[in-house]
Image (cartoon, rainbow, N blue to C red; front, top):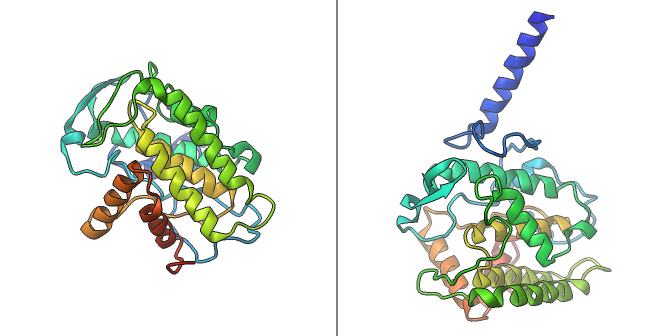
Length: 276
């Protein structure tokens, strides 16, 4: 019996090491480590060219891989060297990145188990995504709208006191856009426009004190799951300056309520030809 227990312990240790291999840290000391974790591994498989059709909920945990990035904002600034108080102590963002990445991965894996009806876009759903991923590190404000004005680069998001109303309108707008697609296979053009709006508008509202980029990617992943679409990479390649600049420019235009540049990026993400 003792020998069997040692074998089991060794197997569990090996599995934990494999799960942490992708990142420079582990969740061994994470305040969330007591939670049940999903097995998320494998290589990002890329997006197929088919946008609709019956796929029979064929998604698997591997689909989580590669659809998010550890960096919160796509700006090579000194952000990663900033320090923030967390339940692990005062840490830099780069030190917290492995923990944040694992928690985002866990939350996205949990979305795979939900039905389309459970993935409706509401303020409560978005706040719960944020809370579930970040409460272990930031219990005081995870899942709560920001209580202060902020500035993101040269952009000033709406005042904090407008956020609740803006988020309600945002969620109603998305559901209205998607409601016409529920009964039939989604028309690529309309669905892509809805995804572009969902991404750009949430980032421009900037509802939370931090990690708005991550919560946006979790929401987008939930929409891909809801329509049983192939996973797509939601961040530009850091080594590709053209791709990065294109995305940043699209976000800037989205701040001005112009969704067209992001719409074009979504066409590329889904492997669609321009204009389809």
